[in-house]
Length: 212
Ligand code: G16
Ligand code: MG
Image (cartoon, rainbow, N blue to C red; front, side):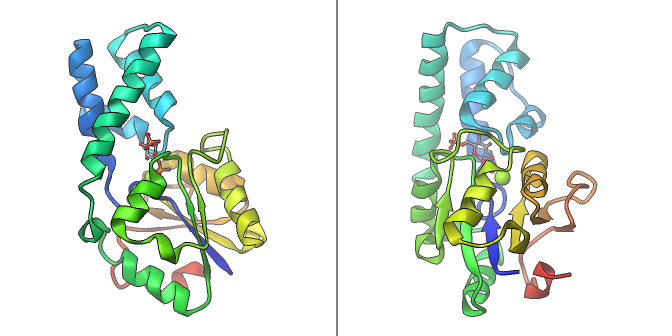
């Protein structure tokens, strides 16, 4: 293995709670309740697709103009919330793991669906660790399409078969497998059953997890 590709939300930082806050406020404004369980459906999913799913749950149809307005409104609120992020919000063990990867010569890329990824990495002070950043502004096809991860491999000049992906979302695990990469799920093994291996935390994680 020569390169490691990290998903952002749910792997490096727990932004799902901020996404949830902003989406549930929007649902309240539209007159229905959006539960934390509903929020699971939005993990790893693009902003536009997320709003479509939210509206399906609320049984609401919007004009294109209102759709765009609400998507922008949700993002404004979300951006306000994530602008408070600091390096303290990096999930346990991640920074240390990335530092060890760099020392051992692995190339590192981000592979995220988020259009706010650059902003988040900056607040976490992690930008300098990344040799490539691929996010929602660079790809047209959402996970489980492999585009985001194949673009990362291409940027790094590494064969996809020599890349390892860390992902917390089912669609993201699929995307990694569709890219012919080794995929390590971050979360629960029964949920991420298509991953090659599943971890629950980066704390004290050996680099041996990349090979196997
Ligand atoms: C993330 C989140 C999703 C979010 C998407 C788009 O993907 O998991 O919940 O809807 O980004 O985010 P934004 O609205 O900031 O563009 P990932 O791939 O980093 O897990
Ligand atoms: Mg994720």
